Image (cartoon, rainbow over all chains, first blue to last red; front, side):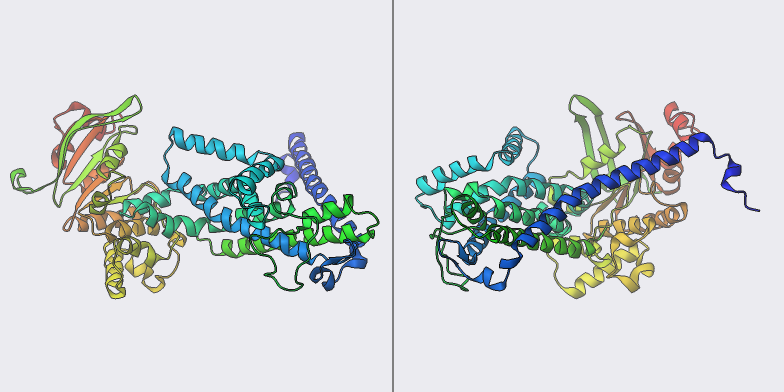
Length: 300
Length: 233
């Protein structure tokens, strides 16, 4: 006969431990849920308010009638350009820097200064980045207010986070793998290319892509460096902007429509917010899908 | 056993000192390693056995590393296929021909007594093998760049006794082709395998001699006798 658990003396201490376990579990669960609630509320509220305006045409037509009617095409395309160009600059520089710091550089005073710079740069408010971009790119480098200048400013802003997240991903590859490669005479680069990068690429890409949503949402850095109040471009042409052009951007568009333009239809700001949120959610979803795919190929 | 004067010196170590910061852990030791011998290095924990081994395989000299095969205490299957694990070093050294790589992979896996177990699944992941298999894979990889000296650092601490015995047989076979330096904390393993044995203690060589002498009733040092017979250590 199997003795019932009670026979093993379910003492008061055991019962208390179980109760504590249940309470802890419930507390952590509720906290996690609390986090989800605002997100659901925000998204559902936005979508409900924006609903009358949401359509495919809203995405593909320019704003008209003093931005009170029409769509968000020029702002959406501007955001895509700004984010795309800034990533094209920041991702390679950031990843290569992180590879250097994590795989090549020893612990010297110079690398410590670089670390310090990276950490501090990550903490600089975006408006300060904006002023730096204005001084360095718009005025000093004679780029003028342009997509290029604004993208470079965004790149400077996202760079430290890309470096930090890439370093993290590289550091998660066990050192024993590296030593095993070095011990058979492989050079550092052969080790990085053959073992380290393939096994950290999911983390690296996730870190880089998450910066997209940050760059897309920022208003301050682009306000002085390349984004404009209003601009009409050819509808449906993804290359309607050039690097030297100024552009509209969703974040700035939302700001101007809510604060600078009178008599705007109630649903318009909500609709712009939904497009901005949708864009970043789409990018984040891509990053999650990519991570799941790459994780499934992870080999240890 | 050949008399010492006929042997070819493979490695000559003169006055090796190692310090980590201000703490010197190896106090100037000298010894030779002869071709085609198994030299065991025994000694209690913290006697700088592994540090000594690492010095032989200086981490910043690629040419030297290609002459030495290194097997660490914990098996390391690289996150690659079994084939690629072994082919990694030859590829890094510039060998591209498929037939040449195939031959090399098979030879190394055979030498490491792993071939029969994995020949059907060479494209399976090296990291999915059992611990003992991974350690033999590590040995196969260490042989893949055709080193002249194979260093084994306590290869058996993470694997079961049966696999340990298999690998010991592998090591005995390998002696005919290359030189083996075997760091071990198992005194009996040194006795089973080694032609000569070095007793390292606190960063000094207490004694280095034929294993027959070290494990006899009358080694030169009293300390050796006591360590080997488990009286201290």
